[in-house]
Length: 297
Image (cartoon, rainbow, N blue to C red; front, side):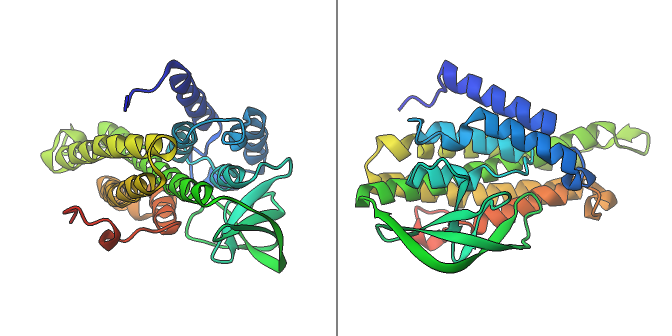
């Protein structure tokens, strides 16, 4: 495989990063800014990125957008609609439901439920509070309505895509939390010096960057495998990536909180928003270490 991004993929990354940086929350207070959310939703809807799979995009493109949106804490639906589009194209706002709860349900009244090779749709009810402050869940109400059957290969590749997309979310959140900590270490001074000059701060940040670089490699391979490898190999690659990146993201986010010191433990610091997103993404399509082995510890 060629792990390098194509020119089109680099342009996609740049566009997603620009949108996330311009309209994503810059503070915890921004999470409740209705005007910003409206502008963000309008911008994301205009891109058409929620329909990448039905437009013929690869798993790599889906992962690119997911990663950049997580880095910028984009808090309107993308992951759920993008995965729903991977199951069945729809002109209506649609997301997916896992274990009876719809994911990314803000502004959505319909969710797809996959059971084996059977696909059903459900209507959504009340919002469900969760750990992740950037996503809104919703309960399923009423009976499920069958909408079709998909092939076993399609199911396998979709499961690989779901693992890759949530892994990209983990990596993006880790990158965002690491950048937040580095920016803080450059300006916060103690004893007449910026705290980033002290080894107790700089070394954990350097170790976090090394973990992130390793995560980029394993995610890039898993995203490529979604469409190019055999279905079983694609799922295995995605599981390995999920385990590795989940551990990386949690470590990096916890380091970010420590670097911020006392303020890192307050509600007003964005570091805990990244950690919350990581914890939620880890438990969405979770993978246990025992499932992958390979000497990981």
